[in-house]
Length: 114
Image 1 (cartoon, rainbow, N blue to C red):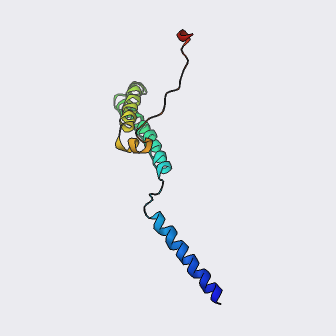
Image 2 (image 1 turned 90 degrees about the horizontal axis):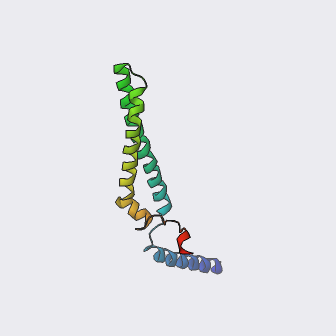
Image 3 (image 1 turned 120 degrees about the vertical axis):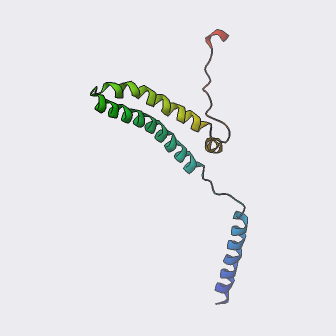
């Protein structure tokens, strides 16, 4: 019975040591943050298109010109979505997730350097 008490005290001591070492560590939330950032970027793009196409659909209903106003406003929705995604890529949240650096451009060999 004495050995089981010793083992429990040893386990308690090891757990306390492990917990005290981990108190200063922050949990790694980069993967969740990156997924959230990507989902937000897709949402921003989709909402820009949806809003402009919705306004175009309502204008088409009012003027009886279906689907021409909606099709004419669609490029504006795409442009608005792209601008929102570009703005998002420069935000503080993107800086935290990317660690201050964006994706690296691929290295392409130049033909003139031969």
